[in-house]
Length: 533
Length: 67
Ligand SMILES: Cc1cc2nc3c(=O)[nH]c(=O)nc-3n(C[C@H](O)[C@H](O)[C@H](O)COP(=O)(O)OP(=O)(O)OC[C@H]3O[C@@H](n4cnc5c(N)ncnc54)[C@H](O)[C@@H]3O)c2cc1C
Image 1 (cartoon, rainbow over the protein chains, first blue to last red):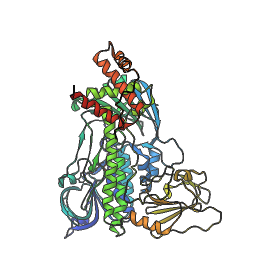
Image 2: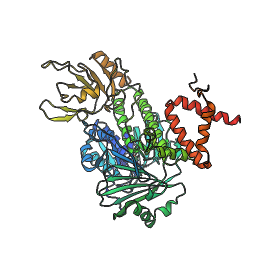
Image 3: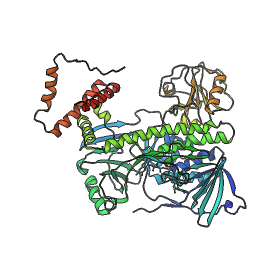
């Protein structure tokens, strides 16, 4: 089976030879997708970052494959979106079967006018590779392989780390420590924090196989198919002719025996026959849904799997972790620069705990539906499946995973609407993308033109030749009707835009205020509020 | 304010009871339980108000002890 495919070298850092312990504004522990995204985002905002990882390779094992639209939009801002899009398998359709009958299908993005698709599938190690390549390009990002954090002294103004390397131990001081060290977080352990939640009893066989097959590029999920009696199954296409197959094995499966290639093949033959295939990777998982009570502990901040864990049904793990990273990066930057109040960091906790609860809620309900807790619950679940072909209401209850969507923050950073707005844009949510036209007639999209800071989007009052409207200090200005044109009306529709309408967008592209008329005083007030100062 | 109606709504309560009883006549316990599960889902959706359904669950659970 496949071995690690990308290796990196340990390099001695000057910090290891310094006479006094060296202090850095931000240290990120863990170069998984989430730590990499956080470090890149901070470095692009000109905050120097040290990123530590205990390994020196990526590509061992097989984990995440489904990357959501919102994650792709974030990764596009970080500079790797188009590369991932070109490499990944784009999909948006899901099919749910009961037995061998199709129950229903769903379309995760039934409209045009978005730069990024509903989902791409791509092996997590390719995503990590793209992020590492990007990290290596950026000044001020110091990525140190084979640097394992083994000790932590918690201080009011930061943290002192003890780090183990192939050449012995050294210490580092951090004003802020970002713990992105995964579900088995060392930092969480060193702080003695509780990571409580539910563990599901059912075991799942996760296999990646290489096979030439022309199955459709869709997410296909089966309840009790004849090829895997009584249990559920999930199949996804990945690049390189690799397919992911998840088979539910029930609570009593023996993880050792179930990983024997002959046993695995016996199961997969039934699913894949008559196709020939090679096993790329096989593993047995049980799933957890749990989170820390709080993600901010003084100057130590948890992001990604170290803060929260979900089952993979719904692809909410790394997707939500990358959304943590983007939520934190601009806030920490603002606080370090003195632009943001201390409460801004507390708002990371508030907003991302809300997101984690939403993700855990969905993930728990999906997993409960797939593996009912008792005979009586199974009977109810089976009743839903039995009614589903005949009644729409039952189809809507069938839960094979509700796929990752960004959370709409109920946040103190948002200025409540004074006037009602319809449309897809929601206060506290990422702004919807929309196709736009540049003055030279070339096509573009809204989101790729938002920069890293606060952005004021103003819609012209109409009337050709009118002067370009003003902005407000501290915010970039985009004018629809001057910088870009809403040539097909999609922006207008998604933002419920009327002449003069004005929108304030946070650095993480979430909408935090909007008005029917532009008022510089109101805009400045909303900006201060979003920075909590 | 409770929303669940517990006053009699059927003009002929005996006939209503009969219809529910007939539906399970000659069914095994397991088959009857499956039927009930489907009926609960159908009727709950027809009601379409989760507050009412929750009140009904409370009433159903509380009544068991008073047997
Ligand atoms: C079978 C499966 C399928 C999945 N499918 C999806 C999916 O489709 N979509 C999705 O979004 N998510 C999916 N997930 C979840 C996803 O893999 C995780 O959520 C994601 O890897 C979390 O990223 P992270 O960066 O927080 O942590 P990790 O990826 O675990 O990275 C943590 C990093 O920290 C390093 N580290 C740990 N301890 C230390 C230390 N003491 N010192 C220094 N470095 C340390 C580790 O070496 C590692 O590189 C899936 C998971 C599984 C198991």
